[in-house]
Image 1 (cartoon, rainbow, N blue to C red):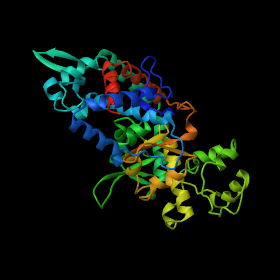
Image 2 (cartoon, one colour):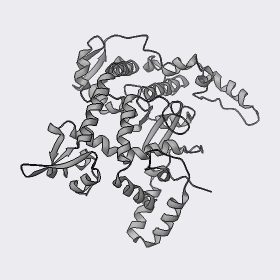
Image 3 (cartoon, helix red, strand yellow):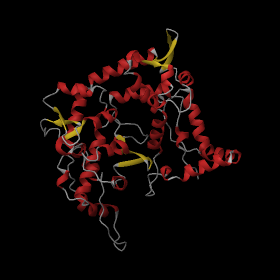
Image 4 (cartoon, one colour):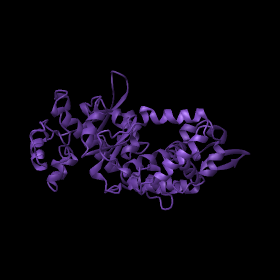
Length: 400
């Protein structure tokens, strides 16, 4: 039986990802190299494989989806693009002294323990070394500078859509307010620009910045409720595709095996508790905890939250960041795991990502792509041809 290897799904020729099972690299290579490793190295690999951090998220026996798993793996390799772009783009002249760059390996996305000059030569498309007054500097390449100008134009053109996204997030939250630092931390998830805290001041009819007296943090408040925006993505899709919306969530009724039910009869029985759904724009604090209505509200909020993101997915860190604002409980992982029709949990238990399955095709591509998503894919196409990416891919295959 062929085992699926997510690293075998990465293609560097055209930047695309295929889903071809390959057990020759992951099984044969690891088995042949394992006896030649030192005892300490073998113990380290064995402990890593048996660690709970490496446990799969899908424990219910459902078949893993290689398309989504490959996206999570791709992001782990290409995370350096976001870190380097975010840090250098806000420095004067988009440059930093090479001696200082070696100390900021985390901020710049450099591998720990490697010299900045060596990493720069392997990422020649994004940054290079320039000399000024006999002092080397790490700076963006002309290509990267032109890409930053292109991204800035996209953010200016999409400003009205981003304002609507923030308004809907505030309408989802309890008290219609969210701390500004949380929005800034998750700004890339929704395509918000770095200076969005300054841009929102241009819209006093929608937003108001206040100070929370409990902790002194700046919070963004909604000025006026808009009933036109208080419509979830499921509610909008109910008229054109009612059957799909009705089958999105599942809150089954337990019944004995002595009651044989066909698939249609089982669905009608489950509809008693599944329907009607609870709007995510309702007041979730008024619901009794640990009830079916409260669970409907929470999965509805997460569904709407993911529909507002650029790529219709988010990691555990993004969701937990808004736990208080969205009235979420600590059992959110198990709650989402039961809703396999609507969500797919990829990655590991300690660092999982939630995908909105209806927003993706069967090959793992987004049905509707935001201009910012198209720009991000353009950046990734440069990195996928990078020599360092090939080296990391080989190392990961050997470790498995």
